[in-house]
Image (cartoon, rainbow, N blue to C red; front, side):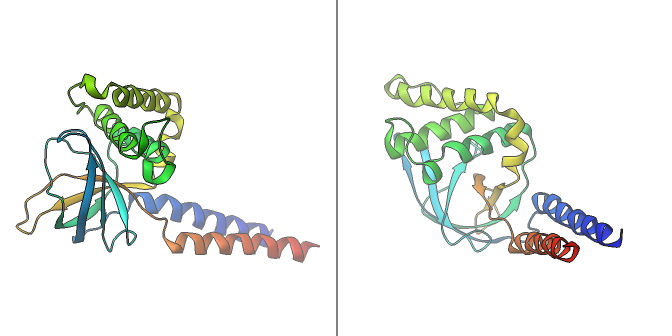
Length: 209
C-alpha cells in the first residue's frame, strides 16, 4: 500500500508540473532580436526569424496582432504570455501543423507560399483576415484548408496550445509593437520529473518481482 501511494504521489507531482508550465508567464522583459521575414506583398507576410534568450537560440514567429506593426530587422524587449482565447489556440494548432519551419512546404506552394498561407489562416481565425487578393488565390485556398482541418481537430487545440505563447513585444521607448505567436520548449525540469516517475515505476516492478 505504501509503495502504491508513493507512485500516486509521483504521478500527481508530474501532472501538477505539466499543468503549471502552460500557465507560467515571464514577469520581466528580455531582449528579442528580429532578423528578417518572408513576404509576397507588403501585407501578405510569412515567418519572421529572430532570437531571444527566453526562447531557443533561433526562432520563427507568426504575427498574431495585425493592427500593430513591427520593424524588421530590429531589437526589442518581450515577455511570454499564455494564450487567452480559443481563437489563439486554433491559431497555435494551425502554426504547429502547417508552419514551414516545422513541417516543410504545403502541396506545391513552396517555402514563402506556405508561410504566407499559414499567416493568412492565423489572421483569419483571430478575426483579422486580410483583404482577398486574386493574384494569390492559391494561398487563400490553402489558408481555408488549414482552417477547415483545424475545425475538424478542435479537441486538440488546448493540448497543442500548451506549447505556444504570445511574445508580447516593446520597443526601446516602451511602446508596444506587434505581438508574435511562438513555440516554446518544455522546461528540462518537466523531463527530469518525468524520468523520475518512470524510474520509480520501474523500481517498484523490480522490487515486486
